[in-house]
Length: 561
Image 1 (spheres, helix red, strand yellow):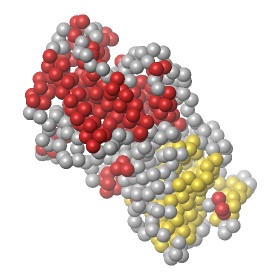
Image 2 (tube, one colour):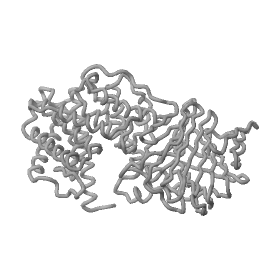
Image 3 (cartoon, one colour):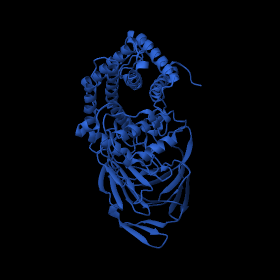
Image 4 (cartoon, one colour):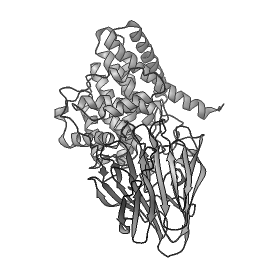
Protein backbone atom coordinates (compact mmCIF):
# COMPACT_ATOMS: atom_id res chain seq x y z
CA UNK A 1 0.00 0.00 0.00
CA UNK A 2 1.31 3.44 -0.96
CA UNK A 3 0.66 6.18 1.56
CA UNK A 4 1.52 9.82 2.11
CA UNK A 5 0.28 13.27 1.20
CA UNK A 6 0.80 12.98 -2.57
CA UNK A 7 -1.21 9.76 -2.80
CA UNK A 8 -3.93 11.07 -0.51
CA UNK A 9 -4.19 14.23 -2.64
CA UNK A 10 -4.42 12.20 -5.85
CA UNK A 11 -7.22 10.04 -4.45
CA UNK A 12 -9.01 13.17 -3.22
CA UNK A 13 -8.93 14.63 -6.74
CA UNK A 14 -10.35 11.43 -8.21
CA UNK A 15 -13.05 11.36 -5.57
CA UNK A 16 -14.03 14.99 -6.25
CA UNK A 17 -14.36 14.21 -9.96
CA UNK A 18 -16.45 11.13 -9.16
CA UNK A 19 -18.74 13.16 -6.89
CA UNK A 20 -19.12 15.84 -9.58
CA UNK A 21 -20.16 13.13 -12.07
CA UNK A 22 -22.62 11.78 -9.49
CA UNK A 23 -24.07 15.28 -9.01
CA UNK A 24 -24.51 15.68 -12.75
CA UNK A 25 -26.03 12.19 -13.06
CA UNK A 26 -28.53 12.76 -10.24
CA UNK A 27 -29.59 16.15 -11.65
CA UNK A 28 -30.19 14.76 -15.12
CA UNK A 29 -31.82 11.58 -13.85
CA UNK A 30 -34.19 13.68 -11.74
CA UNK A 31 -35.10 15.74 -14.78
CA UNK A 32 -35.93 12.53 -16.66
CA UNK A 33 -37.72 10.51 -13.95
CA UNK A 34 -38.67 13.01 -11.19
CA UNK A 35 -37.33 10.59 -8.58
CA UNK A 36 -37.14 12.54 -5.28
CA UNK A 37 -34.09 10.58 -4.11
CA UNK A 38 -32.09 11.87 -7.08
CA UNK A 39 -33.04 15.46 -6.28
CA UNK A 40 -32.13 15.03 -2.61
CA UNK A 41 -28.73 13.58 -3.45
CA UNK A 42 -28.02 16.27 -6.06
CA UNK A 43 -28.90 19.07 -3.66
CA UNK A 44 -26.86 17.49 -0.85
CA UNK A 45 -23.77 17.34 -3.06
CA UNK A 46 -24.28 20.81 -4.50
CA UNK A 47 -24.85 22.39 -1.08
CA UNK A 48 -21.74 20.71 0.32
CA UNK A 49 -19.63 21.89 -2.60
CA UNK A 50 -20.99 25.43 -2.38
CA UNK A 51 -19.94 25.59 1.27
CA UNK A 52 -16.57 23.98 0.60
CA UNK A 53 -15.79 26.23 -2.35
CA UNK A 54 -16.74 29.32 -0.36
CA UNK A 55 -14.34 28.26 2.36
CA UNK A 56 -11.51 27.35 -0.02
CA UNK A 57 -11.91 30.33 -2.37
CA UNK A 58 -11.88 32.67 0.58
CA UNK A 59 -8.30 31.69 1.35
CA UNK A 60 -7.17 32.32 -2.23
CA UNK A 61 -5.27 30.22 -4.72
CA UNK A 62 -4.04 26.72 -4.00
CA UNK A 63 -0.71 26.70 -2.23
CA UNK A 64 0.16 23.30 -3.69
CA UNK A 65 0.41 24.47 -7.29
CA UNK A 66 3.82 24.01 -8.87
CA UNK A 67 5.45 26.86 -10.77
CA UNK A 68 4.49 25.57 -14.23
CA UNK A 69 0.82 25.07 -13.33
CA UNK A 70 -2.14 27.33 -13.90
CA UNK A 71 -3.37 27.76 -10.35
CA UNK A 72 -6.75 26.61 -9.12
CA UNK A 73 -8.53 27.10 -5.80
CA UNK A 74 -10.19 23.81 -4.90
CA UNK A 75 -7.54 21.99 -6.96
CA UNK A 76 -3.87 22.73 -7.56
CA UNK A 77 -4.45 23.06 -11.31
CA UNK A 78 -7.01 25.27 -13.00
CA UNK A 79 -7.43 22.56 -15.66
CA UNK A 80 -8.54 20.06 -13.00
CA UNK A 81 -10.88 22.70 -11.59
CA UNK A 82 -12.32 23.31 -15.06
CA UNK A 83 -13.01 19.60 -15.60
CA UNK A 84 -14.74 19.40 -12.23
CA UNK A 85 -16.53 22.72 -12.72
CA UNK A 86 -18.07 21.77 -16.09
CA UNK A 87 -19.90 18.87 -14.44
CA UNK A 88 -21.04 20.95 -11.47
CA UNK A 89 -22.21 23.84 -13.64
CA UNK A 90 -24.09 21.52 -16.00
CA UNK A 91 -25.93 20.06 -12.99
CA UNK A 92 -26.83 23.55 -11.75
CA UNK A 93 -28.23 24.51 -15.17
CA UNK A 94 -30.42 21.40 -15.17
CA UNK A 95 -31.67 21.96 -11.63
CA UNK A 96 -32.29 25.67 -12.25
CA UNK A 97 -34.68 24.84 -15.10
CA UNK A 98 -37.03 23.05 -12.67
CA UNK A 99 -39.13 25.13 -10.20
CA UNK A 100 -39.03 22.39 -7.56
CA UNK A 101 -35.26 22.37 -7.39
CA UNK A 102 -34.48 25.99 -8.30
CA UNK A 103 -35.85 27.21 -4.99
CA UNK A 104 -32.99 25.42 -3.25
CA UNK A 105 -30.25 27.05 -5.33
CA UNK A 106 -29.23 29.96 -3.12
CA UNK A 107 -26.45 32.54 -3.06
CA UNK A 108 -23.60 30.10 -2.18
CA UNK A 109 -24.29 28.26 -5.45
CA UNK A 110 -24.16 31.51 -7.41
CA UNK A 111 -20.95 32.46 -5.61
CA UNK A 112 -19.40 29.09 -6.46
CA UNK A 113 -20.07 29.63 -10.17
CA UNK A 114 -18.71 33.18 -10.09
CA UNK A 115 -15.52 32.07 -8.33
CA UNK A 116 -15.14 29.28 -10.89
CA UNK A 117 -15.39 31.83 -13.71
CA UNK A 118 -12.78 34.00 -11.97
CA UNK A 119 -10.45 31.01 -11.73
CA UNK A 120 -10.72 29.98 -15.40
CA UNK A 121 -10.61 33.59 -16.63
CA UNK A 122 -7.36 34.24 -14.78
CA UNK A 123 -5.89 30.97 -16.02
CA UNK A 124 -6.85 31.71 -19.61
CA UNK A 125 -5.34 35.19 -19.41
CA UNK A 126 -2.05 33.74 -18.17
CA UNK A 127 -2.04 30.86 -20.65
CA UNK A 128 -3.10 32.72 -23.80
CA UNK A 129 -2.26 36.40 -23.29
CA UNK A 130 1.03 35.97 -21.40
CA UNK A 131 2.30 32.58 -22.59
CA UNK A 132 0.80 32.64 -26.09
CA UNK A 133 -0.54 29.08 -25.85
CA UNK A 134 -3.90 29.49 -27.55
CA UNK A 135 -3.77 26.01 -29.08
CA UNK A 136 -3.15 24.28 -25.72
CA UNK A 137 -5.73 21.64 -24.80
CA UNK A 138 -5.98 23.51 -21.47
CA UNK A 139 -7.43 26.51 -23.34
CA UNK A 140 -10.27 24.42 -24.75
CA UNK A 141 -11.31 23.31 -21.28
CA UNK A 142 -10.99 26.75 -19.70
CA UNK A 143 -13.30 28.13 -22.41
CA UNK A 144 -15.68 25.21 -21.88
CA UNK A 145 -15.80 25.78 -18.12
CA UNK A 146 -16.40 29.51 -18.61
CA UNK A 147 -19.22 28.90 -21.09
CA UNK A 148 -20.85 26.23 -18.92
CA UNK A 149 -20.67 28.33 -15.75
CA UNK A 150 -22.10 31.33 -17.60
CA UNK A 151 -24.96 29.18 -18.88
CA UNK A 152 -25.69 27.99 -15.35
CA UNK A 153 -25.64 31.54 -13.97
CA UNK A 154 -27.98 32.64 -16.71
CA UNK A 155 -30.36 29.81 -15.77
CA UNK A 156 -30.31 31.24 -12.24
CA UNK A 157 -31.36 34.64 -13.55
CA UNK A 158 -27.92 36.24 -13.53
CA UNK A 159 -26.92 38.52 -16.46
CA UNK A 160 -24.15 36.31 -17.80
CA UNK A 161 -23.41 35.74 -21.47
CA UNK A 162 -21.68 32.50 -22.53
CA UNK A 163 -21.00 33.79 -26.05
CA UNK A 164 -17.59 35.41 -25.35
CA UNK A 165 -16.41 32.06 -23.99
CA UNK A 166 -17.84 30.24 -26.99
CA UNK A 167 -16.07 32.68 -29.28
CA UNK A 168 -12.82 31.99 -27.41
CA UNK A 169 -13.39 28.29 -28.01
CA UNK A 170 -13.72 28.96 -31.73
CA UNK A 171 -10.34 30.73 -31.65
CA UNK A 172 -8.74 27.74 -29.92
CA UNK A 173 -10.29 25.33 -32.41
CA UNK A 174 -8.98 27.29 -35.38
CA UNK A 175 -5.48 27.41 -33.88
CA UNK A 176 -5.23 23.82 -32.63
CA UNK A 177 -6.82 21.69 -35.37
CA UNK A 178 -5.24 21.07 -38.76
CA UNK A 179 -6.91 20.85 -42.13
CA UNK A 180 -6.83 17.05 -41.83
CA UNK A 181 -8.94 17.22 -38.66
CA UNK A 182 -6.25 16.20 -36.15
CA UNK A 183 -5.61 18.15 -32.96
CA UNK A 184 -2.03 19.37 -33.35
CA UNK A 185 -0.45 16.95 -30.87
CA UNK A 186 -1.65 13.95 -32.93
CA UNK A 187 -2.31 12.03 -29.71
CA UNK A 188 -5.64 10.21 -29.89
CA UNK A 189 -6.56 10.80 -26.25
CA UNK A 190 -5.91 14.55 -26.41
CA UNK A 191 -7.78 14.74 -29.70
CA UNK A 192 -10.85 13.30 -27.94
CA UNK A 193 -10.17 15.49 -24.91
CA UNK A 194 -10.27 18.70 -26.96
CA UNK A 195 -13.21 17.61 -29.14
CA UNK A 196 -15.22 16.78 -26.01
CA UNK A 197 -14.57 20.24 -24.53
CA UNK A 198 -15.79 21.95 -27.69
CA UNK A 199 -18.95 19.85 -27.96
CA UNK A 200 -19.79 20.43 -24.29
CA UNK A 201 -19.24 24.18 -24.65
CA UNK A 202 -21.80 24.37 -27.48
CA UNK A 203 -24.81 23.44 -25.33
CA UNK A 204 -27.84 25.38 -26.55
CA UNK A 205 -26.18 26.53 -29.77
CA UNK A 206 -28.09 26.10 -33.02
CA UNK A 207 -26.08 23.73 -35.28
CA UNK A 208 -26.96 25.64 -38.45
CA UNK A 209 -25.70 28.89 -36.89
CA UNK A 210 -22.14 27.66 -36.32
CA UNK A 211 -19.52 29.51 -38.38
CA UNK A 212 -18.71 27.41 -41.40
CA UNK A 213 -15.02 27.01 -40.59
CA UNK A 214 -15.85 25.99 -37.01
CA UNK A 215 -18.34 23.38 -38.20
CA UNK A 216 -15.76 22.10 -40.69
CA UNK A 217 -13.07 21.83 -37.99
CA UNK A 218 -15.41 19.92 -35.68
CA UNK A 219 -16.50 17.64 -38.52
CA UNK A 220 -12.86 16.95 -39.34
CA UNK A 221 -12.17 15.97 -35.73
CA UNK A 222 -15.06 13.50 -35.76
CA UNK A 223 -13.93 12.05 -39.10
CA UNK A 224 -10.48 11.42 -37.63
CA UNK A 225 -12.04 9.06 -35.10
CA UNK A 226 -14.40 7.32 -37.52
CA UNK A 227 -11.69 6.95 -40.18
CA UNK A 228 -8.92 5.88 -37.79
CA UNK A 229 -10.98 3.27 -35.91
CA UNK A 230 -10.24 -0.42 -36.43
CA UNK A 231 -12.92 -2.68 -37.97
CA UNK A 232 -14.21 -3.61 -34.50
CA UNK A 233 -14.55 0.05 -33.48
CA UNK A 234 -11.38 0.22 -31.37
CA UNK A 235 -9.66 3.60 -31.81
CA UNK A 236 -5.84 3.28 -31.87
CA UNK A 237 -4.28 5.19 -28.97
CA UNK A 238 -1.43 6.97 -30.73
CA UNK A 239 1.12 8.72 -28.51
CA UNK A 240 0.17 9.65 -24.92
CA UNK A 241 -3.11 8.40 -23.51
CA UNK A 242 -4.52 5.45 -21.60
CA UNK A 243 -4.59 2.26 -23.65
CA UNK A 244 -7.86 1.31 -21.97
CA UNK A 245 -9.36 2.97 -18.91
CA UNK A 246 -13.01 3.39 -17.94
CA UNK A 247 -12.69 7.16 -17.56
CA UNK A 248 -11.31 7.56 -21.07
CA UNK A 249 -13.98 5.23 -22.48
CA UNK A 250 -16.71 7.31 -20.85
CA UNK A 251 -15.24 10.44 -22.42
CA UNK A 252 -15.30 8.76 -25.83
CA UNK A 253 -18.92 7.66 -25.32
CA UNK A 254 -19.85 11.25 -24.40
CA UNK A 255 -18.25 12.51 -27.62
CA UNK A 256 -20.22 9.97 -29.65
CA UNK A 257 -23.51 10.88 -27.94
CA UNK A 258 -23.04 14.64 -28.41
CA UNK A 259 -21.74 14.34 -31.97
CA UNK A 260 -24.78 12.40 -33.18
CA UNK A 261 -26.91 15.33 -32.01
CA UNK A 262 -24.82 17.84 -33.97
CA UNK A 263 -24.94 15.81 -37.20
CA UNK A 264 -27.66 13.42 -38.40
CA UNK A 265 -25.03 10.66 -38.47
CA UNK A 266 -21.31 10.57 -37.72
CA UNK A 267 -19.92 7.13 -38.55
CA UNK A 268 -19.09 6.65 -34.84
CA UNK A 269 -21.68 3.95 -34.10
CA UNK A 270 -19.06 1.19 -34.11
CA UNK A 271 -16.71 3.27 -31.97
CA UNK A 272 -19.45 3.83 -29.39
CA UNK A 273 -20.43 0.15 -29.32
CA UNK A 274 -16.81 -0.87 -28.76
CA UNK A 275 -16.33 1.69 -25.98
CA UNK A 276 -19.46 0.52 -24.19
CA UNK A 277 -18.41 -3.14 -24.47
CA UNK A 278 -14.93 -2.33 -23.18
CA UNK A 279 -16.13 -0.74 -19.92
CA UNK A 280 -15.08 -2.87 -17.00
CA UNK A 281 -17.94 -1.69 -14.77
CA UNK A 282 -21.66 -1.29 -15.54
CA UNK A 283 -22.43 2.01 -17.25
CA UNK A 284 -24.21 4.45 -14.92
CA UNK A 285 -26.23 5.88 -17.82
CA UNK A 286 -25.15 9.52 -17.59
CA UNK A 287 -24.25 9.92 -21.25
CA UNK A 288 -27.66 8.54 -22.27
CA UNK A 289 -29.32 11.45 -20.46
CA UNK A 290 -27.52 14.16 -22.47
CA UNK A 291 -30.40 14.66 -24.88
CA UNK A 292 -31.40 17.98 -26.42
CA UNK A 293 -27.86 19.29 -26.22
CA UNK A 294 -28.17 21.65 -29.19
CA UNK A 295 -30.95 24.08 -30.15
CA UNK A 296 -32.38 23.14 -33.52
CA UNK A 297 -32.04 20.30 -36.01
CA UNK A 298 -28.67 18.62 -36.60
CA UNK A 299 -26.40 19.34 -39.52
CA UNK A 300 -26.19 16.99 -42.57
CA UNK A 301 -24.49 13.60 -42.06
CA UNK A 302 -20.76 13.03 -41.92
CA UNK A 303 -19.29 10.28 -44.05
CA UNK A 304 -16.27 8.41 -42.66
CA UNK A 305 -13.49 7.32 -44.99
CA UNK A 306 -13.21 3.56 -44.54
CA UNK A 307 -10.73 3.10 -47.35
CA UNK A 308 -7.03 3.80 -46.93
CA UNK A 309 -6.56 7.28 -45.44
CA UNK A 310 -3.80 9.85 -45.32
CA UNK A 311 -3.86 12.47 -42.55
CA UNK A 312 -1.40 14.86 -44.11
CA UNK A 313 -0.91 17.32 -41.24
CA UNK A 314 -0.55 14.66 -38.54
CA UNK A 315 1.59 12.42 -40.79
CA UNK A 316 -0.56 9.39 -39.95
CA UNK A 317 -1.50 6.80 -42.57
CA UNK A 318 -4.13 4.06 -42.41
CA UNK A 319 -3.87 1.24 -44.96
CA UNK A 320 -6.88 -1.10 -45.23
CA UNK A 321 -7.68 -4.18 -47.24
CA UNK A 322 -10.49 -3.62 -49.80
CA UNK A 323 -13.09 -5.29 -47.54
CA UNK A 324 -12.15 -3.23 -44.43
CA UNK A 325 -11.44 -6.33 -42.34
CA UNK A 326 -8.01 -5.28 -41.03
CA UNK A 327 -5.68 -2.31 -41.12
CA UNK A 328 -2.16 -0.99 -40.66
CA UNK A 329 -1.47 2.41 -39.07
CA UNK A 330 1.84 4.19 -39.69
CA UNK A 331 3.19 7.18 -37.77
CA UNK A 332 5.31 9.45 -39.96
CA UNK A 333 4.42 12.85 -38.55
CA UNK A 334 5.80 15.38 -36.10
CA UNK A 335 6.95 14.37 -32.64
CA UNK A 336 3.83 15.78 -30.96
CA UNK A 337 5.24 17.96 -28.21
CA UNK A 338 5.08 16.84 -24.59
CA UNK A 339 2.62 14.08 -25.48
CA UNK A 340 4.63 12.64 -28.37
CA UNK A 341 6.53 9.36 -28.48
CA UNK A 342 9.85 8.39 -30.07
CA UNK A 343 8.14 6.13 -32.60
CA UNK A 344 8.72 7.45 -36.11
CA UNK A 345 7.78 4.96 -38.84
CA UNK A 346 6.13 2.63 -36.33
CA UNK A 347 3.71 0.08 -37.81
CA UNK A 348 0.56 -0.77 -35.82
CA UNK A 349 -1.68 -3.68 -36.86
CA UNK A 350 -5.39 -4.09 -36.02
CA UNK A 351 -7.73 -6.93 -36.94
CA UNK A 352 -11.47 -7.63 -37.04
CA UNK A 353 -11.62 -8.87 -33.44
CA UNK A 354 -8.86 -6.95 -31.69
CA UNK A 355 -5.33 -5.63 -32.17
CA UNK A 356 -2.28 -7.69 -33.06
CA UNK A 357 0.38 -4.98 -32.72
CA UNK A 358 -1.25 -1.85 -31.25
CA UNK A 359 0.01 1.56 -30.25
CA UNK A 360 0.64 0.87 -26.54
CA UNK A 361 -0.53 4.10 -24.91
CA UNK A 362 0.95 5.05 -21.54
CA UNK A 363 0.22 4.28 -17.87
CA UNK A 364 -0.85 7.11 -15.54
CA UNK A 365 1.59 10.00 -15.67
CA UNK A 366 2.90 9.38 -12.17
CA UNK A 367 4.34 6.05 -13.28
CA UNK A 368 8.06 6.07 -14.15
CA UNK A 369 7.20 3.63 -16.96
CA UNK A 370 5.52 6.43 -18.91
CA UNK A 371 8.85 8.02 -19.94
CA UNK A 372 10.99 5.10 -18.83
CA UNK A 373 9.41 2.67 -21.27
CA UNK A 374 6.18 3.47 -23.11
CA UNK A 375 7.20 6.77 -24.70
CA UNK A 376 10.54 5.29 -25.78
CA UNK A 377 11.39 3.68 -29.10
CA UNK A 378 11.88 0.25 -27.54
CA UNK A 379 8.14 0.11 -26.71
CA UNK A 380 7.14 0.59 -30.35
CA UNK A 381 7.32 -1.50 -33.52
CA UNK A 382 9.93 0.54 -35.31
CA UNK A 383 13.70 0.93 -35.79
CA UNK A 384 16.40 1.35 -33.15
CA UNK A 385 20.06 1.88 -34.02
CA UNK A 386 22.86 0.99 -31.61
CA UNK A 387 20.37 0.29 -28.81
CA UNK A 388 19.50 4.00 -28.71
CA UNK A 389 16.10 5.67 -28.76
CA UNK A 390 15.16 7.82 -31.71
CA UNK A 391 15.45 11.57 -31.45
CA UNK A 392 12.21 13.58 -31.15
CA UNK A 393 12.00 14.14 -34.89
CA UNK A 394 9.49 14.49 -37.73
CA UNK A 395 8.91 11.87 -40.40
CA UNK A 396 7.97 12.43 -44.03
CA UNK A 397 5.36 10.91 -46.30
CA UNK A 398 7.31 10.44 -49.53
CA UNK A 399 4.61 8.70 -51.57
CA UNK A 400 0.95 7.85 -51.06
CA UNK A 401 -1.71 6.13 -53.13
CA UNK A 402 -5.01 5.24 -51.45
CA UNK A 403 -6.49 3.31 -54.36
CA UNK A 404 -6.25 -0.48 -53.90
CA UNK A 405 -3.65 -1.79 -53.61
CA UNK A 406 -2.85 1.05 -51.20
CA UNK A 407 0.80 2.06 -51.21
CA UNK A 408 2.87 4.28 -48.91
CA UNK A 409 6.51 5.28 -48.59
CA UNK A 410 7.61 7.10 -45.44
CA UNK A 411 11.01 8.18 -44.18
CA UNK A 412 12.86 9.70 -41.24
CA UNK A 413 16.45 10.93 -41.61
CA UNK A 414 16.80 12.72 -38.26
CA UNK A 415 15.89 9.86 -35.93
CA UNK A 416 19.57 8.82 -35.63
CA UNK A 417 22.65 10.84 -36.64
CA UNK A 418 23.85 9.87 -40.10
CA UNK A 419 21.22 7.13 -40.57
CA UNK A 420 18.44 7.09 -43.17
CA UNK A 421 15.20 5.23 -42.36
CA UNK A 422 12.63 4.33 -44.99
CA UNK A 423 9.50 2.20 -44.76
CA UNK A 424 7.43 1.11 -47.75
CA UNK A 425 4.06 -0.61 -47.49
CA UNK A 426 1.68 -2.14 -50.02
CA UNK A 427 -1.72 -3.41 -48.87
CA UNK A 428 -3.09 -5.91 -51.38
CA UNK A 429 -6.35 -7.82 -51.06
CA UNK A 430 -4.38 -10.83 -49.77
CA UNK A 431 -1.47 -9.46 -47.71
CA UNK A 432 0.44 -6.43 -46.44
CA UNK A 433 3.99 -6.12 -47.75
CA UNK A 434 6.21 -4.21 -45.33
CA UNK A 435 9.75 -3.19 -46.38
CA UNK A 436 12.05 -1.36 -43.97
CA UNK A 437 15.42 -0.10 -45.17
CA UNK A 438 18.10 1.33 -42.86
CA UNK A 439 21.28 2.82 -44.38
CA UNK A 440 24.20 4.71 -42.83
CA UNK A 441 25.46 7.70 -44.79
CA UNK A 442 29.09 6.95 -43.94
CA UNK A 443 28.94 3.29 -44.93
CA UNK A 444 29.90 2.28 -41.39
CA UNK A 445 28.22 -0.82 -40.03
CA UNK A 446 25.89 -0.35 -37.08
CA UNK A 447 23.63 -2.56 -35.02
CA UNK A 448 20.10 -2.15 -36.38
CA UNK A 449 16.99 -3.52 -34.66
CA UNK A 450 13.45 -3.64 -36.01
CA UNK A 451 11.07 -4.34 -33.14
CA UNK A 452 7.82 -6.29 -33.09
CA UNK A 453 5.56 -5.46 -30.15
CA UNK A 454 2.54 -7.77 -29.93
CA UNK A 455 -0.59 -7.29 -27.84
CA UNK A 456 -0.85 -11.00 -27.03
CA UNK A 457 1.05 -14.21 -27.74
CA UNK A 458 3.62 -14.15 -30.54
CA UNK A 459 5.10 -17.39 -31.89
CA UNK A 460 8.31 -17.28 -33.95
CA UNK A 461 9.93 -20.14 -35.89
CA UNK A 462 12.84 -20.17 -38.28
CA UNK A 463 12.63 -21.41 -41.87
CA UNK A 464 15.90 -21.49 -43.78
CA UNK A 465 17.17 -17.92 -44.00
CA UNK A 466 13.88 -16.43 -42.81
CA UNK A 467 11.17 -16.74 -40.19
CA UNK A 468 7.44 -17.26 -39.78
CA UNK A 469 5.37 -15.63 -37.07
CA UNK A 470 1.90 -16.17 -35.67
CA UNK A 471 0.21 -13.32 -33.80
CA UNK A 472 -2.70 -13.93 -31.46
CA UNK A 473 -5.46 -11.34 -31.30
CA UNK A 474 -5.61 -9.48 -28.00
CA UNK A 475 -9.28 -10.46 -27.75
CA UNK A 476 -8.88 -14.09 -28.76
CA UNK A 477 -10.23 -13.68 -32.29
CA UNK A 478 -8.63 -13.93 -35.71
CA UNK A 479 -4.89 -14.46 -35.63
CA UNK A 480 -2.29 -12.89 -37.95
CA UNK A 481 0.40 -14.75 -39.90
CA UNK A 482 3.72 -13.33 -41.04
CA UNK A 483 6.75 -14.30 -43.08
CA UNK A 484 10.04 -12.42 -42.85
CA UNK A 485 13.36 -12.20 -44.74
CA UNK A 486 16.31 -9.78 -44.65
CA UNK A 487 18.83 -8.65 -47.27
CA UNK A 488 21.82 -9.45 -45.00
CA UNK A 489 22.37 -11.99 -42.21
CA UNK A 490 19.96 -11.16 -39.40
CA UNK A 491 18.41 -12.81 -36.35
CA UNK A 492 14.80 -12.58 -35.19
CA UNK A 493 15.03 -13.03 -31.41
CA UNK A 494 12.17 -13.52 -28.97
CA UNK A 495 12.88 -11.10 -26.10
CA UNK A 496 11.17 -10.12 -22.83
CA UNK A 497 8.85 -7.20 -23.39
CA UNK A 498 5.84 -5.38 -22.03
CA UNK A 499 2.38 -5.48 -23.47
CA UNK A 500 0.11 -2.45 -23.90
CA UNK A 501 0.03 -0.02 -21.00
CA UNK A 502 -3.31 -1.25 -19.67
CA UNK A 503 -1.17 -3.53 -17.46
CA UNK A 504 2.37 -2.13 -17.40
CA UNK A 505 3.56 -4.73 -14.86
CA UNK A 506 2.74 -7.64 -17.19
CA UNK A 507 5.59 -9.04 -19.28
CA UNK A 508 4.94 -10.38 -22.76
CA UNK A 509 7.19 -12.01 -25.34
CA UNK A 510 8.25 -9.49 -27.99
CA UNK A 511 10.65 -9.83 -30.90
CA UNK A 512 13.74 -7.93 -32.07
CA UNK A 513 15.00 -8.44 -35.61
CA UNK A 514 18.71 -7.58 -35.51
CA UNK A 515 21.40 -7.08 -38.12
CA UNK A 516 24.81 -5.42 -38.09
CA UNK A 517 25.22 -3.66 -41.41
CA UNK A 518 25.69 -0.37 -43.23
CA UNK A 519 22.65 -1.07 -45.42
CA UNK A 520 19.93 -3.56 -44.49
CA UNK A 521 16.42 -4.22 -45.77
CA UNK A 522 13.88 -6.09 -43.66
CA UNK A 523 10.97 -7.55 -45.66
CA UNK A 524 7.75 -8.90 -44.12
CA UNK A 525 4.39 -10.02 -45.44
CA UNK A 526 1.37 -10.24 -43.13
CA UNK A 527 -2.11 -11.68 -43.62
CA UNK A 528 -5.08 -12.54 -41.38
CA UNK A 529 -5.68 -16.18 -40.58
CA UNK A 530 -3.56 -19.29 -40.15
CA UNK A 531 -3.28 -20.50 -43.75
CA UNK A 532 0.18 -20.65 -45.35
CA UNK A 533 -0.80 -18.01 -47.91
CA UNK A 534 2.79 -16.94 -48.65
CA UNK A 535 5.35 -19.70 -49.26
CA UNK A 536 8.52 -17.58 -49.44
CA UNK A 537 9.97 -14.07 -49.46
CA UNK A 538 13.16 -13.07 -51.21
CA UNK A 539 15.01 -9.74 -51.09
CA UNK A 540 17.14 -9.71 -54.26
CA UNK A 541 19.42 -6.78 -55.15
CA UNK A 542 17.08 -5.56 -57.89
CA UNK A 543 13.65 -6.74 -56.77
CA UNK A 544 11.52 -8.30 -54.04
CA UNK A 545 9.78 -11.61 -54.70
CA UNK A 546 6.67 -12.78 -52.86
CA UNK A 547 5.90 -16.39 -53.69
CA UNK A 548 2.34 -17.41 -52.89
CA UNK A 549 1.35 -20.90 -51.79
CA UNK A 550 -0.43 -21.30 -55.13
CA UNK A 551 2.93 -20.92 -56.90
CA UNK A 552 2.19 -17.44 -58.26
CA UNK A 553 5.01 -14.93 -57.71
CA UNK A 554 4.51 -11.19 -57.12
CA UNK A 555 7.59 -9.10 -57.94
CA UNK A 556 8.29 -5.54 -56.84
CA UNK A 557 11.22 -3.35 -57.98
CA UNK A 558 13.69 -2.62 -55.18
CA UNK A 559 13.06 1.11 -55.58
CA UNK A 560 9.73 0.33 -53.89
CA UNK A 561 11.89 -0.40 -50.83
